[in-house]
Image 1 (cartoon, one colour):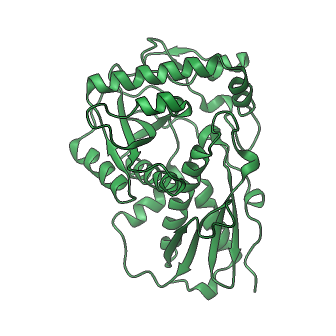
Image 2 (cartoon, rainbow, N blue to C red):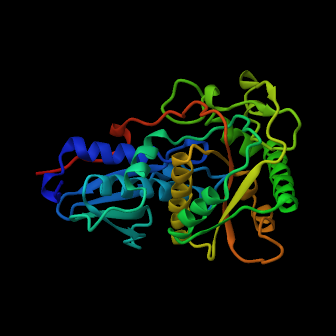
Image 3 (cartoon, rainbow, N blue to C red):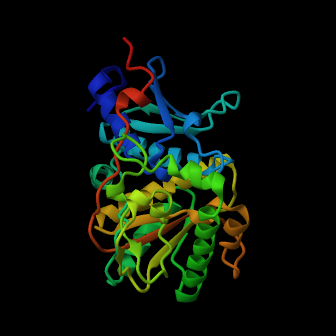
Length: 328
């Protein structure tokens, strides 16, 4: 069992490595970390220089990404025996400080799936390849919903007609992005090989031959990444993650919920990828709300299914994201 006095450099690096394993839009990894040794607190800050000014002008996707990293950090802190005490937006005078995680301790007891979630942190990554038509068991869907609710969000899997409507909105958003010069140029900067961030060609996956599943067409951004066509699942399972409100703290909670869902899916060998296009256009994002309820602000669309892992995206070295190590 660790205590706060025994946090060494190797353990701190493992905690930060877990945090940076989180997903982010275009794999931009918009985060920085700093240890305050006096309070045994890890500060999680936004790397605003890595934001997407056109695609994400309000920073919603950035906050969701950082929230996912906070969830991973919480899981790793608990794994090493501390109780993670999280504060969101702890100092309003420092808007780039999005969260802090204090290493209190000892941990008062193990959480459900604790070890499994920690192991899943290192195995989880998006899979942009076709999934099989195998249905997700009801008990697995129930656990995914529970994982979102535990973080203050909602997760629903709509029926066939609503899924079709959501995919149509996603397709419209993809078209708008593809015809917007500023967004095309911005997105193009994140499609690259040989870097520790961004989207290398190996992870992009094929395009849908039938056109009914609007996978983001990175090949339209860079002809060198032209992808072969493949037959995607005829009835994709799209889960809708939403929050009751739509403030910065809600975006951070949505990110934690997203990662909890993705890690729980990984435990059950369910693959996932995100459809973000419709969330990048305010009018289309608003239209994603279920017309029957009209409640909730959609924060992510998650495609779920069974299939190959697919390749993992690269991660930035810890020296790029950790401002300082532990001080004695």
